[in-house]
Each structure stands twice: as structure tokens, then as C-alpha cells.
Length: 216
Image (cartoon, rainbow, N blue to C red):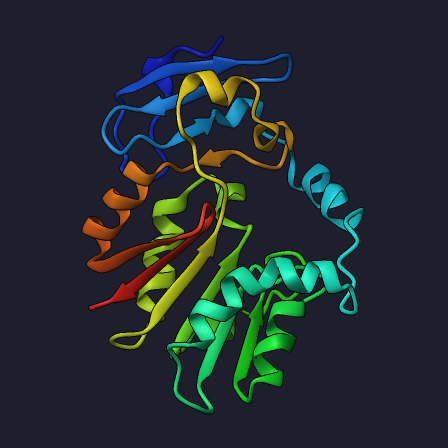
């Protein structure tokens, strides 16, 4: 087990981390300041191994079930947009169905993904909305990414995230979500409350796994 004194939270930079859980693959640590649960760098996959797992995913643009899944983000975001808005799908993956759904609704949407659409130029603009679905749990330094995402929002623009939420250690122990080896950062409601305060946004929880941060 790694010495907790050698660990630093990737969200708030605190060095006050306590052991949260251990399974057969890795240890999980919880920050006592922002409550982020994370995997230490020594237990994370290499970028090559991570991409190999992503390449094995099947994200079919014609999959009705996948469209229904993404509608949990699409519906609340689209309902608060005026027509012909400009958006960004951050972490769009190899099959950007969510972007297609926004295009079908009349919006323009740029794509960014570290592995599949790595165009840094789109990160230099500001947008009327940004989506980040099933992405933030893969990020080892979420502070850097939140700074980037909130910085790309126009005033009153929403940042919509989708990720499963940590509830407590007992449920975490049998939680399927942690078993994906590419998942390394796990957020709770308390963690998102910290994020909202830290980055000057209004916080909304929609259902069990959609979070909207609206820039003031």
C-alpha cells in the first residue's frame, strides 16, 4: 500500500488523504477536504492500456438504447438553450452520438477527445454549453480539467456532466463502477458542492448521475 503522505488530491491539492477501500486490483483514497475518492498514480493504467480498453467499446450511433442513455444529459441541457447555440462535447469518444443529437436539434458542436479528436484549438474558444459525459471519472487531475471546462463557458452557460456518485464505503465495496480499471476519480455530492463553490458555478443534480454546473 502506498504511503498516504506521498499522495496529493488531484482536485483540491490537499495531502490529507485517508484509505477508503482496497480490492484485488488497487487501493482507493479519500481526500478529507473535498471528499474525492481516487486511485493513486502507481495503480493507474498506462495511456496505451487505457486506450486499448476504450477501443474495445462499441458506441453505435444508431443504438436506440445508447441514445436513450445520453438523453439524460441531452434533455435538460437542450431545454435551457436558445436556438442555434455553439457547444463542445469534451471527451466525445470514437462515436460522438451526443454531438449528433445536439446537431439534430439545430446546434453547432465541436468535438474534443484526448485519443479520438485531439484538436487543442477547440479548447481556446468559449461556448454556450459544454458536455462531459462519462469522462471526469477517467481524469487523474480533475482540478486542471474543471479550470479548463469552466473557463470555456460563456456567462450563464451550463456544463453538463454524467458520472456515477459515491455514496458511502459500504456501497463502494460492491460498486460495479469502480471495477472499470480506467475509472480513477470518484465524486460524491459533497465533492461536487466543493467544485461548484471553488469554480463559481450554480450546482444542480438531475437524477442519479447527471450534474449541471452553470457559470454565474
